[in-house]
Amino acid sequence: MNGFKLYLLADIQSPPVELTWSDNSPCFYSRLPVPLPHTVVLFSVGKFPFDNETKKPGTALDVSITLGDDRIQFGSLDEHTRCILWEKTKDTARLEHNNSAVSLAKLCVEVQGVDYCDNSYLATPAMEEEVVKEENIQEENENTPQLSTPSPLPRKTKQKKRGRESTDGTPEGPAARKQKLNTRMRALKNEFKTPKKYGKKNCETVGMPVLNEVNSDILPKTGPRISRCKDVSIRAPSPSSRWGSSMCMIHNNRAVLVGGQGDRQQLSRDAVWTLDPDTRRWRSPELTLEGQKTEYRMGHSATYDPTARCIYVYGGSKNLKWFHDVHMLDVDEWKWQLVKVNGKAPTRSYHSATLYRHELWIFGGVYPRPDPNPDGCSNEIHIFSPVMENWYCPIVTGDKPAPRSGHSATLIKDQLVVFGGWDAPICFNDLYILDMGTVDWSKPEVKGMPPKARSWHASCALSNNRILIHGGYDGNNALDDTHIFNLDERSWSCIHVEGAPTARAGHMSICLPYSHENQEEDEVIIFGGGDNDGTFFNDLFSLCIPFNPVLDDVLVEQKGGKA
Image (cartoon, rainbow, N blue to C red; front, top):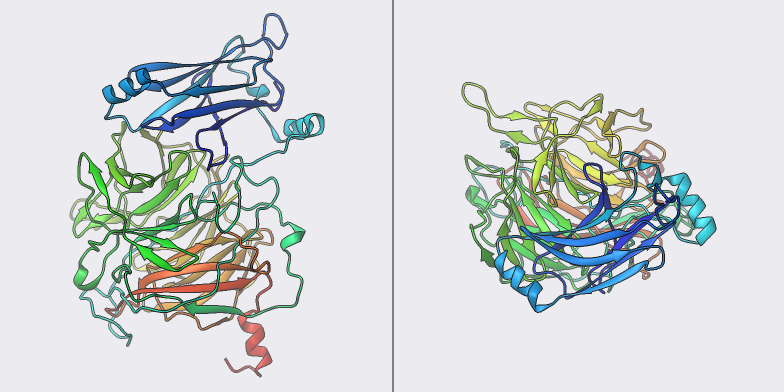
């Protein structure tokens, strides 16, 4: 059973999704959105499992879909039947109606006649290499979107900026114009467990693709080039000025903006917007609600799940109210739904959320503590499983980062890179890496000059295993510098940007999918934020970063030491 894998195809416009092996029960599983798709295809790859008694490849795999308390027979797989197709029937629609409160169904593939305590038959890197040689099947590694969660900033006394004023020192801003086409990293080979197709018109990447080894095709072919930034805002319609919101990419190459806070500490009532990166146009979708209303908030996280085609919005705060709820926004029907969960949910705001192996990993953030203690920061990891509909805490090893909020967490392959944040009055500029497979923390030795301490900066993954850090708040002022961390080299560099946005924090950044229009740079979209002096922004910038950018210190040196 070496290298055996199962894949699910529920939408012809989306790539197949690999099923996950459950350590608690003898099955592979995945989840399906409700209403169920009209057609579902399940297929297997690799050597079929052997029966323990006969030692022959005759093991049967029974497939079923669990919908609430009901079980729907899907079919069975064996050595000769490697693929099955299931179609929705009237009886299935009746079961959906009877389980209308259920948001996700579970597809389970039970493995009969196998020693379930022995996971040696599951795919390992060495086994996958053997399967590639024998069956010419390409190895794939899982992709997870990264999300950095912006947060509100403490008030600062002076700094002159444009736009309207706010009593709490948060930003808002202007409008802009047109711009050139988006660019993005190209798909590197052997990168995703869920295959991704990069392209401008049809892109299934979510947020920032998870990168692995550098592909020579996208290495810079020229000398260093200057990074350029343009204001590409349009006048209307557009979101109101805000910070403390969250933004993520979804399946149809659209960005979705959720929540935030603007002038006079007012939460943004135009809470949800979509952005077309090609045309730079915003749209406010018409939303419907199922059950409890989703309250306006800031400091929350919004994470896209490509399997369920929904955005999970978790936590955040509203004035003095703190949230621990999880809401699901269906991006096909634009419908809100409260997710009912088991287990104790943590109360968090200004945390980071990362989707990894179909689960939502929460790190850090602020949580309320009773008097006389002030609100505190966390350095714990909590995991929400949409399949099991529960919360749990993993066993964590290594040297944990100090408690913090307003940090960034960027996933590259199986490594979650955490940078910065603060636990008032201390700001951090340290960098930690969490191995998501072993849940082990480490603090690597880094080269180069790290960015100054900051929180509520914007961050996203770039091509060639690089991470962008822009702006933020250092405890006194908003910042406007741009840095890149190279994960392969464990090195920092500060890059020079022409036309850089004004200093800001609590803003969002997303690296756009790769485009053939420009093969030598990444394009990052930056939206909103605040200057910590009562001004909020709603401007939109396009930041183009070459694969080999001109560094800030190099440019200063060329100008004779004058910045």
